[in-house]
Image: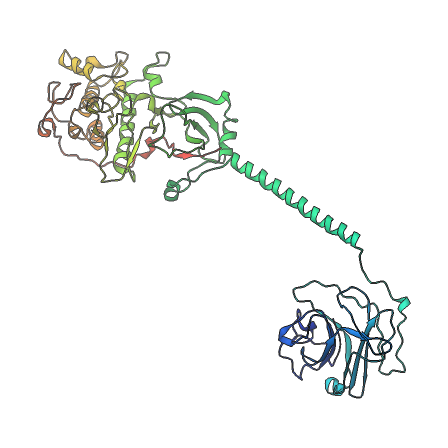
Length: 538
């Protein structure tokens, strides 16, 4: 703290946090400030003698004279030190006459010492004031520290004769809390801080728990295709908490529930599958193994799966025109996966139970649990038999290896035309070798196109050719089914056709050439159930 005399109240150039708020580091005569400082900090840049001194400053924070805080005894023999930070009240006298400035300090109860602590005889107050006006007062700064300083009373006069003496007995008590109260205050502050920390911790824990309850894990494919997910919370509410009343069935990978999403979402009715990682069949080729539960979301198919209409006699028989349309839908879906998607997708489990029927009985290919993805140009070779017998490439069950492809009707969807559920290759060939290929047709069909039925059965035989290289591509299959391209001529006795046991033939013997294609294919991803839309939860 400092007592000062100034020609002005403008201290804009002074540093507010240092030098008592009166000076800056470049003090000069233009500053025109006289100050008596009671300093409790040692600043090396202004040559302070210690952190407990009294000084006289003229236009600069560098004192023209300073001394350790102390006072002389009554006999002027002993000099008694004082601590400015002790908290005890101190009385200060500043006397100026002519060019002499005297400064004395003493405890509050003492009278003024007969000998001043500081005495400077070269102070010209006229140069500082330079006019008829001057300002006096107190100023202070503590830098980065925290100090409480009080002025309990003061008296000022231009002459010693008119100076009013301070009555110490009438001064207010200096704020000086007892150690007990101070301890209580500190303890209260500490407890309050701990309580606030505890409350924040509980709130954060509740937030994290709630976040984990509905947590979602972002997958790498979302960075490429954008977010195609529903929050777990929405799926939980849509299925009424995965209630048994919404239970649709159980597949190889988990349970499926019906869900109804809010009205503002385009896809309102969905099928929600909770994938189980404890089942016998894993998702090693579909999604990386992890501890969290995986939720798959598909468009809800109100008519269920195709096998329910083909093998359940309680349901009405599907007419041929609808069966043929479903077969075309699935061939378009597979062609999209094989040739139009960013990566080659091999489904590897084409069967009636994996074909879903929407409200208009359009065929939708689903259940990609056994599928594999390949970069275009990579070698799509497998060495393990995956899928059910009758629905996979025949060489997998005997030779244990194959150039992977999807058999559209060579077992998987022949059921659309025939009455048996699987392993139909031998049955179809025997019918063809006998009286007629149409004998293999489902006897429940009454109205049908003989040419279309024969076309489907022959495409199935081509797809089941023992030589993988001799099988038609999915693009060719689409052309055959649409009648845009004529199929090659072959018979049930042709090499590679109709045999269940692989026979060694040259590729030239097994190859069946077709006529050139004459039409283009459009994007047919609409015939795939979009089970990549998902929310991953707890």
